[in-house]
Image (cartoon, rainbow, N blue to C red; front, side, top):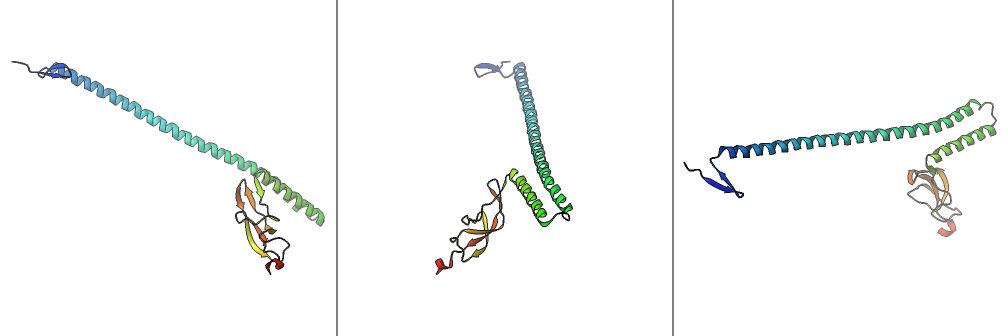
Length: 183
């Protein structure tokens, strides 16, 4: 019986040779097992990285929540100091004269302004400023004012900025100009 030969990749392969075929299959099975092992390792790496990222995200959220809580506590500590002074003023209002009560109210107002300023809250500039619809809310146009048209002449409700952002616009009265200039 004559064995047939085939040349593949420069090697002579005998088709009827079971040992060569078994070697080839064994080699392919080894490569497959290595590929499966590498895939399993990569999958485990991926799962560990995902878990690390999830833990990092949760840790960052916890840090942000803790920071917010500390900031709130500090703010409320400052506000409680103001509240204590209001309570003292109310407790002694019967023993104070009008001028003493007014002085106590001015001190509480100053203390509250200091708390707000320390938190970055500043009043919106109003009287004597040109009306700006981004920071002012006009509630009335005042005629026969000595101010030129478009100038803020009265602050009805103070507006505030937190940093560069408007927290509440100032409610103001705006000059409509003088009567003589309108005629």
